[in-house]
Image (cartoon, rainbow over all chains, first blue to last red; front, side, top):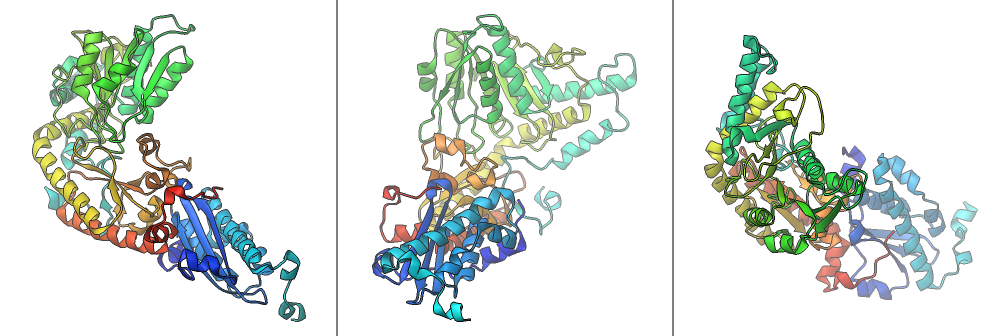
Length: 146
Length: 418
């Protein structure tokens, strides 16, 4: 299968690779949400960590991915897109946008779904840990007044 | 041999010889006149064009027979191993069936779960047509022994079909012993020897084989031509033809013969016969160095299949915590295969690796590297460095590698499969 140039570019220069500490350290931090989706048996595991401000803005994001080139590119792209967004804005990202941006073929759509799931999963985790109720994550004052 | 015939230096390193091989230029040279000056139909018995074609075919048949220790009359030409397997399995089942078509209990067939699809699928079709079958689960080293076959036999077993060497692993099954067992029990023994013939010494008499399939394009011959050995004595094996017509190839394979292809196949057999021994040693040394270096440089590297009962040219290696397709993307300058799900339409990892009980995660992490006639030491050196670099790049990205380094047992984690 031929890969799009964007997939190859993300594969070779993945953005925001890493984690905010060991799995124990990040588990203890309330400002960090962790999403781990997929399974090694399925050939895909995506780990997304988001660092969220008190105002609900995703200040930083890090990813790690075990998966094909399209999965790596999808998760790398997801970190780029969510950085600087509010959690609510990040939740509006759809897998179809990732498919379009990376020109993923039909057989690779599941990679984009996994990336969307990892965003949701990380945000849910952050909400749980930070004690933020779903209502309090409505658009922040900054965006409301903009 | 290497310099003038090798592909240009800017093309990728070809380590996928188990998929197909480059046609040897000597093969192409032998074939060419049969497209133009000697274009006759071997069935034309009354003029020179026909005689030339027939001579070309019969010389090829001699070379093919010599390569496997058979009589020329016992070799029939087909379009390749898939056809040879279909003809051998379906053709024998039909003749040796214990009940008429349309009935059940027509007979039992023994094979293994990690056979090629071109063996498994004909057997599955026969199961829909009243035959029973046992698919032996291979052990962790992938080698099928005569003991395993013996345990699977039933009073109504009519056919055993076991490949000589596995196409994904290169592992070698106990063929002579299985042949002896089948002959003792008077059961027909077929072997798909596609990866074996041309690389390893073959003697259908000593190895007690009744039916043997092989293909031209796996041994530096053309695609679209193969052979089927059909034993003529002790016992005389009969086959029901799959296609009817002009009665070519002893009536077992009607259709005008692919003269140029058959001539090329014969030439390829002749070259393999002459070069097998030296080539085997050269390939084994390079393959072993490839594996030793990769294991030395990269932790959690596992060679799949039996360590020594393996063809000299195939290596199937899993690199833990790295997914196979992304690894192939990282080594785009190497043409090879992966057992990863993502390289197939089914999104399932290799059923061959799974059948050995290798975890799905390691099955997803595998590369098959297969060497051949024009593989050079320099190419192996480059491949080692490229693979090491790509695995390191991907492990930096791998959440599984982090967990491994933290000492977490990955098999104990409950994953959110999607």
